[in-house]
Length: 278
Image (cartoon, rainbow, N blue to C red):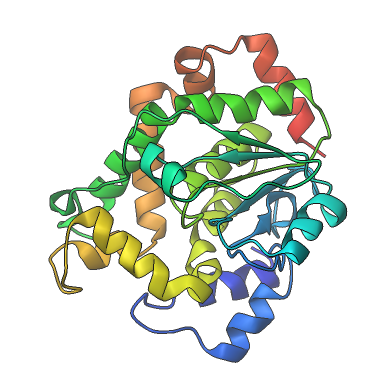
């Protein structure tokens, strides 16, 4: 692991109950793979992740909610990053409550979801570090957000080299699954994929209070010390590994998911992989 990747991972491993040191946070958010976009948070270029990363820079971007996107932020996405499509990986209720703002020259795609509202069962997160809960939650994302994930892959297949962005509310879980899919298909190594997953600990810090309320609503709790809630809010390498194992056993890995569940052909898969790579 590179020195920069190691430093970012160390910061990301800070306990979720402890605010990140301001100077360290500013330094991290001011350098790649993070991209400052006025009015949103947790915005990153997947191709700028340090380490063994085969994904093309300037192609696939991820972020948190765009509900507060400022005019200058719109210009950053459209003019600086050249993004032409935005994929909204949120539930029906989330999208209805806060539709993405219109951006001239950018197509907003609110992908149909099988989830009316994003909810979790804390009983799944009680044991260990919540590994079983994360495995269940993320495999549910693969089932409920098939349309959105397929839309992203069709874009990669049909519009090679055209930059795009995808997001959910926190830019952490559903967005993290989509990012893991793209990195996995491109051939990124495990350290790079895990680092991208863990970086949401840093990227969501500016929206800490808003996202805490969102998490409490989704979990149906009114106390921070509710059993399982700490694990739900914490990102760990073990949780991503548990998801990877579930992905393999239930779907046959990313290739099995893309061809078996999403219905892409082997030829499609090779085109997608080629278009993702540098």
